[in-house]
Amino acid sequence: MFTGIVEEFGTIEAIEDQGDAIRLTIASDITLSDAGLGDSIAVNGCCLTVAERTDSAWTADVMAESLAKTSLGDLAVGDRVNLERAVTAEKRLGGHIVQGHVDGVGEVVSRTPSEHWEVVEISLPAGMGRYLVDKGSITVDGTSLTVVEAKDDTFTVSLIPETLARTTLGFRAPGDRVNLEVDVIAKHVEKLVRAYTGAGTKENNA
Image 1 (cartoon, rainbow, N blue to C red):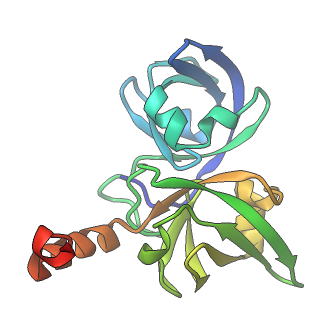
Image 2: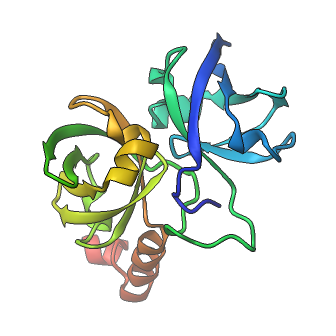
């Protein structure tokens, strides 16, 4: 589990094509300070497992399912990525509950700069809009953000200078793909309500 508070930039050092998977090698500093084999690190919001490590880089395998459901397949050597280690019991939950399980990929639609912040509009995959509400939480490339305006097919977030400087959202351009994870609590509530009301059963859909 993660909090959506990005700890540092990592840099893609190598990408090994394995046919139905890729192996990423990522240079980092903070996330390597206490990382062991088998530990979880979120890369642009996608939970990956440390398979190998050196003093300056670590390696993770990305399976076909993850490549199909995330933007990790878009990465190239030299790209910067958002990194966060799994949360520990004594760590402050500065963002919100983030699983590192990407729900879908959106695209940056537009950026509107202001004097002290920047409003970014991002597209939503079909069906994901129902999980977003104004002032609710969403994870974009591993960054916990507050939704400004939620629509059926897009949403906006307001990025403060700290977020612009410390995450990849500072340089994402219109057309760039980003990983999205909705608030898991919203998904649990939806399932419970459907079970309670019978929504989605044959009788109600007939």
